[in-house]
Image 1 (cartoon, helix red, strand yellow):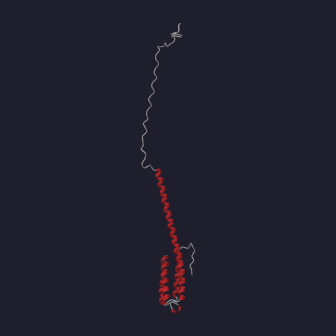
Image 2 (cartoon, rainbow, N blue to C red; image 1 turned 90 degrees about the horizontal axis):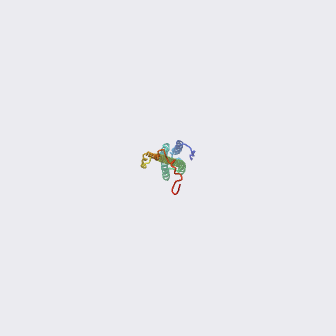
Image 3 (cartoon, rainbow, N blue to C red; image 1 turned 90 degrees about the vertical axis):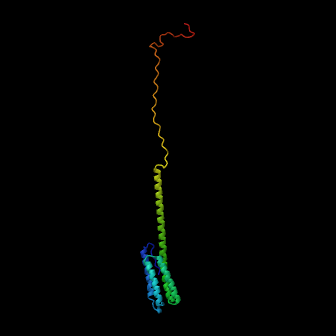
Length: 193
């Protein structure tokens, strides 16, 4: 009796299935309180208490605790079989049901572990992305901010007004006579005339 659940099945449905499997196991044990059914009354009561532990853990969405309770059930079954309180045929039937419930619990535990690992990886990726974004924002803020040790500002020299150009020197006055009419043409050293 293996409980095959679809991959996308919600956790509540999975645990309900385990709860039903545990109740089935309890029903198998409950119907066997007489010696002729292969199960002594005291052994049946003890095994039913263990099945209840598995059922409660499954109903509480605690597959790890359900697995621990299932281990205890299996150990009690083996002890009862060795003591002669459970027939070999009854032990095999109960063991088959325990194996099916164990396989389903193992599947759920693996799925929960994978789900937790995926969530942890997603959380880690989100943290890394947030840190990268913060670093990028900090780098951008530093680039637009003034430098921490700015270069000293040297004031530009005050504008100097250009010196006025010197006034032109007046030419010597010739009293209106100039060199004209002096008749010096052709005169000069070595000229007669």
